[in-house]
Figure (cartoon, helix red, strand yellow):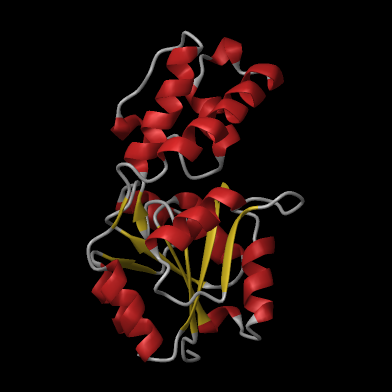
Length: 218
């Protein structure tokens, strides 16, 4: 196997425990529109594929139409801008992992389905001390994960093959992205989804804590 030279990370549920702020923001939107709200744990299965899919899952089936979903998305953008860093924290061991990867000469990138502006805001706030070659959220005109377009863009810009890159994430979407871009799929067990989901969707490795990732880069 070629030596790993880069690690591409998902953001929410992988680097950043952001579930509380996402849940609180979405619940504020739902409540303001007269809909039921949900526990943090419910949002583990609502997130991962972008804001539109979050509301597709949270709204009653009969109200999932373009006007209502778009309205919820617009409201969420405003609410989340107020409360994106109230409960969110880096997972234990992430900062140390990133320092160790840089020390080994490993390139790093972030690829998230969170809107691009919000992704940049979170990375610049929580991860400002760490050098990422690329930070991509969901950008207009670029298909969201699991489409491999953005992952391939990162791979190409670094002049690396898929086997030289780890893609690290916590959901089926992340594992499918890795497989589609021919990167090495690494599932994290501290994130939002269970290990079975990761394995069923192509995880080649599972790690139970951030430091274990260092064993995969040599």
